[in-house]
Length: 352
Image 1 (cartoon, rainbow, N blue to C red):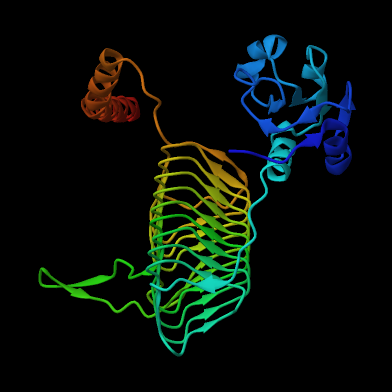
Image 2: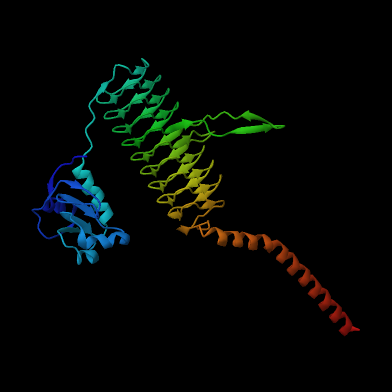
């Protein structure tokens, strides 16, 4: 992927980073610290990769002041190397501007309102009373059902489905295969037979949200499902009906959020986290990968609820010990009862 060339000194001024070494070095692309060559800029944010610093062939490295002492090449010095790298990469690889137009194979209802600056790609289907704002890009094969609204400069990459009445904010990015606004899992039981509960809410996506590939967000059953501004959702996440996710929360791949749960602002959920329904997770709560969350956590903090993998033999022994706990508890209870009876008999004998 080709980029735009910058001098390192210009990048330092643009991003407010400290320049170490020559500012005349030309930066043409980004690479990893171990693979970088001439013209490349890389970053060091994880100590696991410090071993590659002294031998890197990069033209420049983005790092903190401590690592800068060992850096053999020009550098951008900052307290947050990963953030500065992200901004450098955005400059080196700018996103192409959307060119307005509608592909000849798109199928669009006459009542839809599409801004002339928006792009509608091949084989897109757009329903009645849809509103698409300026700068929107709707990628190939996407389906937008009736009454959906898409805000300015949002991008549906390809094969995205927006079910009816879904509301998308500004500058939202939705990756291939995502489904927004499908029915929530609402079923009432009638003597063993399931009766479908109508899902009459919708999904509201705030500004500057990014939604990963094949992630699904269910519409509300009564209240709306709400994804607030700045939220980041990884690939293959399931978000059930009536869930509310607060500003700038980030959720990693394969997490599952059950219905009517509220997640606060600035939270993080690691990969594979499972959250049961009707819970409240407060602002700045963080859960490690594979955690199972079955109760509310309202206080800020870092939480874990799993057992890391160990050798299989050790795991089998641990499980065997857990299974013996019930018998151990029963024996302790019997001993306590016997001790109590003995104490009662002793007290009675002393009274006599």
